[in-house]
Length: 623
Ligand code: WT7
Image (cartoon, rainbow, N blue to C red):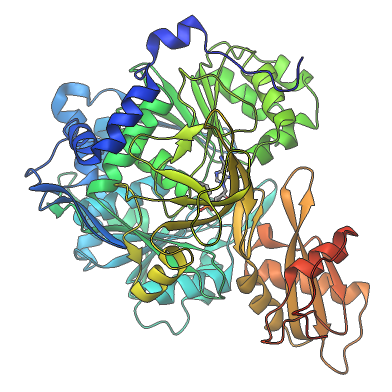
């Protein structure tokens, strides 16, 4: 097979495609974005129409000015009123094989009960609710219940540990934490409630902890503070008015790692966000009434917020949601679930594909994957080799792959193929409608085709973050001042002669380990919180499956000696502080770190040293 072979859409795919003429519609959309987005927004229901589509006072955008809406109205109420209450909304399977199903009506009933339960605990519009749950229906229900009553959810991925959870609860001043008695990750029992107990210690804002029973594992309930989820909703009405929200009212905060130790609270709102995620899912995955959608992400990350909790329901889809991890108990598990539930659209990560590939093509071949129509990936660049494997063995050389580029901050897909486009393995193809993406140098000058540079977005889009929670200054600085006047993505990329984008990876101090995002600073401060460590520097080193793995350089305090035992202890420390997914692959003990004269660690030098490559210009190096 020629290396740069393009993949053309089949006539079957073309027939169903909502968008057949990308170039024409794209041009129209950027010539008059307000017209384009205004038209899309009309496909959804609003309590009161907006007066103006966009108000742009750089770098602050407002969309659908004075419009009144609620994302949950569009995700649930709207369908029930249209007579779709009996359509299956959610099929959940536990790692243990247990199954739970919810029609739109049943899902709405559960959301209403919890919404009333939250109100009974004193939750009001604008209050923050922290959700620290494993992949259970209650995780989705909790998010929807908050949004329904206008509370702001802040979901923390439950693979994070005490310290990471604590900083996020503190920053948001959460009133409520919703967690579980525990869950099983493979064979291991993870005691989420215990983690929460430690994380909320002495945090005054937290008035109640709600505990979902998952394992039946015994947990201690703190009197007056803690309540079991099932007791909270017992006898509570399944009717609850959906709160009328302004388009620009906050929907959620989602923390993401940046270049300082304090994670950034990315703030999204009801109106523009629901419009952006709705149309990207519908058009990029060609959503049909009979689709069964499966996104393998966790709602603890933005992929799960946008493309599990909200957009699939806004599109009126039936979705499958799985509790367990990939490759467990065997590498065929996911493929068996696709066959069992007749999944039609499947969305996962390059890491998961590379990890599966390692076990060969016999595993997918064991299962009937004929139901699949379109595949997707997200989170990191996909290498052409993994793309082709995914295409051939999962997509059976029949299903196009949507390599969607976007970020926590963008809320929605920004650069992605459409099913009607020809595909180049490894390229995320072209900007979505209304999105103006460009490759520039550090002064903002546009680069020529095939020249690498910084990926920036030049104009606002409806699902964009509005600010960083209670930190406008940081919002301006991080995203809009790095290269003045444009949104700085932090990614390096290039655009080829056909206008296809090729994302190369982060240019800042952010790592992507298995698609998970970590700021070096958050990891480094976790290292320094260990009594043996004076200073630490963390880099990402290329990893065949994870994309990047964490390598740390550590300077020890006097009196501590480097040893394999200490290395292990430090790895466990990071696991405990941040989470198992942040566990460093290797720790190297050093006497000094390369720094600039102003004291900034030169990770570039460490990376070069680690990979045995030339170090390059070190004129600014102090030592
Ligand atoms: C970063 C954002 C957006 C959902 C999950 C990650 C990388 C994301 C792609 C892609 C190459 C990608 C970028 C981006 N990224 N999608 N299709 N190809 N790289 O969200 O944690 O906010 O991370 O993920 O580096 O900046 P996130």
